[in-house]
Image (cartoon, rainbow, N blue to C red; front, side):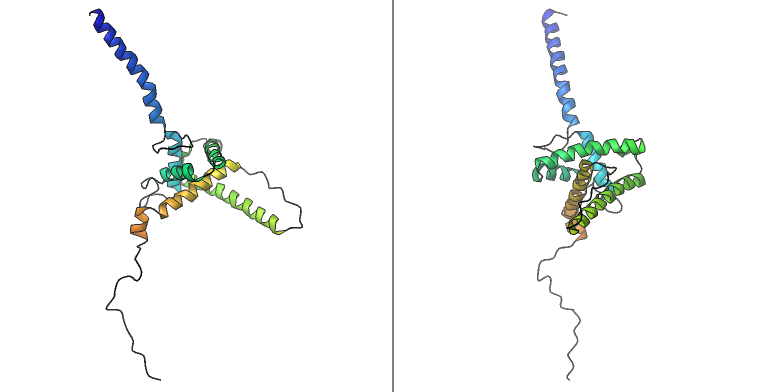
Length: 203
């Protein structure tokens, strides 16, 4: 092999090696283009699993079929304040850690019933805190109550709250829902010539 061929092959190898890290980074990123938050493919999958637990696939499409996890991320990126975005990302990490702490498994490794129980526990704690805050606000003369330390961090509850709210929002505004579940008809609607009619009786 002559010197020119060796140099040419060496250049191809070096160029390919430089390209490989960039390719692996692209694969590790979220599928949806985001401006304000940085989400990895694993984090996107976690959001998808949470959304699918909220709206599972049955005889109708589930959250993943409708790509509602991507809708959640787009809404978070476009419509939420920076502090909410930061709390979401932090809470997502807490969520993953809590799954391992409680069940010694990642969320995607849990069975459906365990996933539902996990999310229900987060929701119940959040509702209990809201009720306590409301009661404290109603009792104006009473000393402000110190909320008990919960099992889940405020950021984790923020993460779950945003995922749930935007998953439902995305589902009820999806093409599937608007064309198959809610059949919208313009006012005044169709003309029905066979509508039953009773003649008014004379008094």
